[in-house]
Amino acid sequence: MTFRQYGAFFQPDELNALTSAYDAAWQEMSATSALTSAQASVLKSKLAQIILASACTGGRDKERLRQIAVRAISGDALIKEPVSENC
Image (cartoon, rainbow, N blue to C red; front, side, top):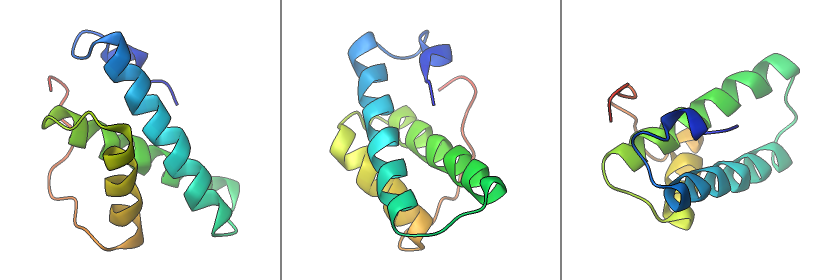
């Protein structure tokens, strides 16, 4: 997943943090469950949306973004707002 399309809203180091958080969250989630390719695609999209939404509200720490995404997917947190196109 690349977050480069959101370069107008984030600095390069922030984009790297988003990508690192996504990669780590995906690695963790994919290691703990057997997924079909369709399920993997949906999960990847949700992880990216969660990370982006969290970053749009000010979170930039890659470990914190990873935790938020994994917890949200695991059902420990609720995602109430869709990702804003204009951060």
